[in-house]
Amino acid sequence: MNLNTGNLPRLSSTHGEPPSPPEFLRPWLIWTAGFLSFPLAGLAGTRVAGRVDSPVAALIGGLVTGAVIGAAQALTSSRRLPLVRWLPATAVGMGLGLLLGAVAVGYGTSLGDLAVMGALTGLLLGAAQAAVLPAHKRGRAVWAVATPLLWPLGWTVTTVAGITVEQAFTVFGATGAATFTALSGALLHHLLPQARPSDRRSPEKLTQDHV
Image (cartoon, rainbow, N blue to C red; front, side, top):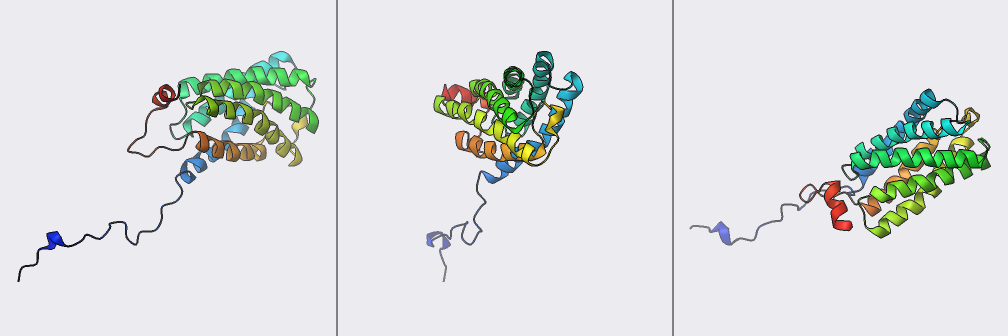
């Protein structure tokens, strides 16, 4: 007897397979690992400009620190952020933001001073990054509002952790950076979900689609 197997129902190839991990987990972990760039960025900024105790030191130190952070964020964004625009935007936003924040608090390093400095730094940094964020207008607005909230949180966590912030660094330390990157990574996934390999597009293409 011949058995025509072509008429038999086919079993699903995914039957019995374990559920896949959340799509956000891998890119979120990669982004969060980028917190290691913050201490390196701070060291670079301090090496070039010294302590943040003058307008020139704040501006130059912020530019250098922002350039390092911007490059690291673009490289750990799983191709969601365009390096050629994100790096200069972060550098300029950080430089001008740190200048504004540091001058506003008289280069103070108390918890209150650093929180205010962080909010003002994040205000200009968030606006600069939002301008090149490959997202719709509402998403850019959310990023611009969230950054001046998350940046002082980074300074607060660093100060509470007992880091010697009296040395007037350009950016908060590793503990604050880990907090900032973890939260900003979740926000980035909400605004720019990781595309599947089959339909992944470049950040430039995403920008065109959302303008």
